[in-house]
Image (cartoon, rainbow, N blue to C red; front, top):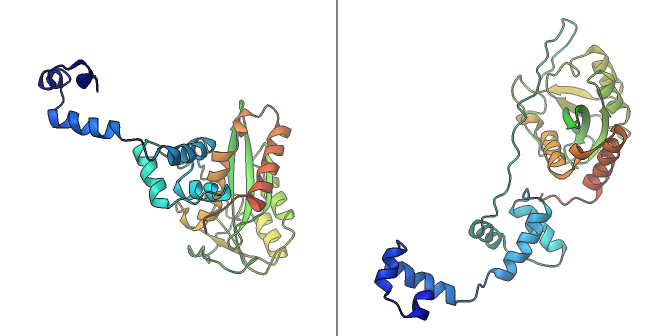
Length: 260
């Protein structure tokens, strides 16, 4: 546009700018056409920013639909690529501690076998523990998720990794069917006291192989979403953190949209 305005030689200025003559005219044609994606981009960008750059096209599409805007997923993907809206990907937790077990601890057969496509509620549960760093402290979150309904049916938070963390979680399970509860081979889940509590609930234990967390994907996915969507690192007290956990559980179980 500048070249056309000042009437200078295209070839000379293109050489100075280190671009080809054809490249300049191609840019000029596009520059003169109104940006047709701009309105849709603003809608997508607003949702993308709301999710702090962590929403993929599925979540963006659902959020837009909830606001009355139906947009094709291919358009959302194209706009994200065109405008550089790169979704932040959760990284695997490198600090997972594998603790040694005593002779009294038992390991159970994998009865879930990566079949997370459960359709009947209260038949299969996944459980695990994750850490939540805030200030200069660590808090631990234990949770149990129904594989079929995707509801977090019980949870507990603690400032330490003692057995009370997981035993307290089991005590909060109010609706329990005669199914199985799946975990890794962590110290807590092979503990005789935990094994006995699970039996009293009428559940059968199932465990992943060492170093393989794929079977426990439903609960790992929940922890990932929690860490993406909750500003727990800004908490100043343990009570404040517990309140944020409870608030998110209410949101996750009753309000949060899920693609499937």
